[in-house]
Image (tube, rainbow, N blue to C red; front, side):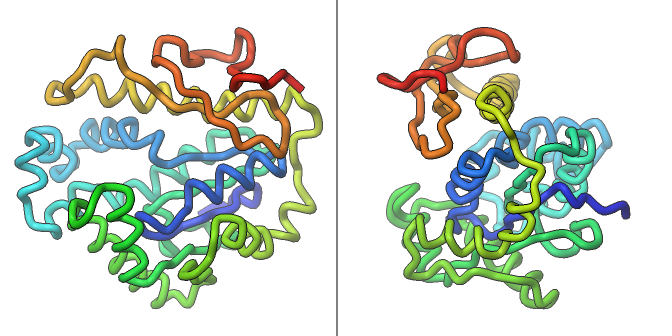
Amino acid sequence: MESLPQVLWIGGPPGAGKTTVARRIARRYGVRWYNSDAHTWEHRDRAVRAGNPAARRFESLMPDARAAEPPEAQLAMSLHAERGPMTVEDLRALPPSPLTIAEGTQVVPGMLPPGSSAVWLMPSDEVQRVRLDGRHGPSKAPALYRLLGRTIAAEVREAGARTVDVDGLGVEEAIAAVEGAFARRLAEGPRAATAEERRRLLRYANRAVVAQIKGAFTRPWFTGDPADAVAVFDCECARPDCDALVECVLADGPTDDTGPPLLAPGHRAA
């Protein structure tokens, strides 16, 4: 498998903090952020077209019926194994410059190209449970997420891969640990050199959010009106230290590379 030296990989189970860490580092250093969640429906559509039985079963079931399936069946329908190679294909299609930080639960040692720079954020079972309870409500997180955690931990442990124990770490401490793991590659670049280049990277991530939500609304069992859907985007002011988010209806979200930057209140284009 051909290497992807321009990609920095962050893996880990649900609740590990992958998205927050990757998003913040990408902005701080002027590199692209590949948010795997934003490609979920695209990957599912590809698996269905390829005739994957688990993908087709997922699409055929109503959400309540899927949730009632045993965790092992849910794991198969999550396409945990299949989405890794799809992610590699996605990243091969991106420009080689600047660097890309790619994160997701499907990032496991066995799917990585040779020579990859990768780190896994690993919470203990108890810390993962607490974080998922905070996100979904006490004992309401899907059992699949706990099974994914155990599955990923076993794969990472067997490979002897580099990990960051996130128990007891705040957000900035977790970011610092991943920055340390990628220090040489982040210093070497390539990275965005201008504010306009930074804005294009932010627009790439924001457009992926729009595509993600639109993909969900193509499902016959997905409820709601897309005209009323509210999404959260990164502020496109291009300041490296900005961490602001912009909440707006989907119709006001970016669908192409044109148009003015999407800015948080009080922010100006750098």
